[in-house]
Image (cartoon, rainbow, N blue to C red; front, side, top):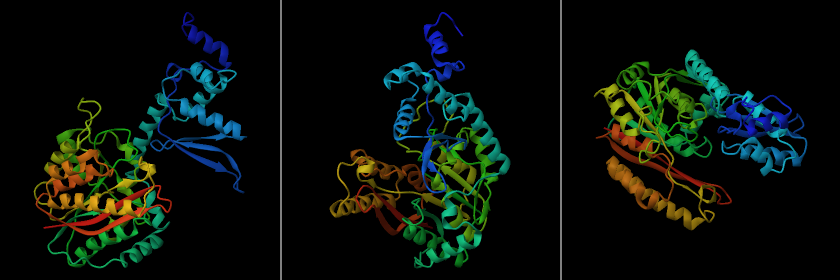
Length: 426
């Protein structure tokens, strides 16, 4: 410690605890999940703080409402800008000790940016690659075991009709809404796949193009491990992954942990398994292709670079490759920044605007579609542009067909999300 630095001297004098390492003088909370926890009777006991990337967490006991407000205020203040002393002053704390103690507790579990979280991220990456797959997460909502999961999928598929497509199926657009809200769209999209298989089509691999919702990185991220579900394991398509690494190095795989909390790839695994078995998977999450990377240092790949690399890795024969574009369309209502709740008039307006953009998508020109969505700064908040644009680019020459359109709206109008089921044929 530099005894000539009054900040460090005050820290030593005021905390009554161990001296804080430099990165904790201005503590910065990582993106974490905060959930209440209680006893067996449901009595509230405190907050459970979980890091969705490396999986570690911390339970903070909350003895009173006043204490709860204090902890929440502290967490909001840990943004890497104010020192622990400034935070204590801002919150009118009688001493800095509670602030520094919480910072130390969070650091011990890797919930702050710093060496502990970096170490835990490295351990999680190593663990995933040793295990060979992401564990089943959202897919468990279809059933905790194989029999229940398979029965649920079969019952949902039975609700949809055969779309009677002309030509060979090469891709589908399906939602990543939760299974109940997106039930009709899952049914329609995967009925198209089921019908294609029943007619004799076979697939050697599936490419799932997902949407990042909680990504720390801002480039494309590909999983080099497989995915588990209650129906077993879909391995990663190592042949394609090896080709991608040969052409582009590690930058497509650098943010593997961004797939830990991401549902837009994993939600499709059991549907694919129920129809195709444990086929090799290439799962990727793709950001908005109109957004520039934060750092132009070559460490991460744009959507356009990913498309070029994947085209080279797959080669010209895509007859046994299925593309799944995991996409949602409009996001409207107060929860997404709109001034008014969604009413019937707004639903009709969104329907018209969505169908106009879908018409542009079906026309098959990736750049024209992107331009149509960007008109007036994407007022409908379509959030799967990376998957949709890349899908159009990779499936150039295939014919998209709209099978179903769906709106999921909260009863109070606070939010509405739209989705569509489409099929690509050749």
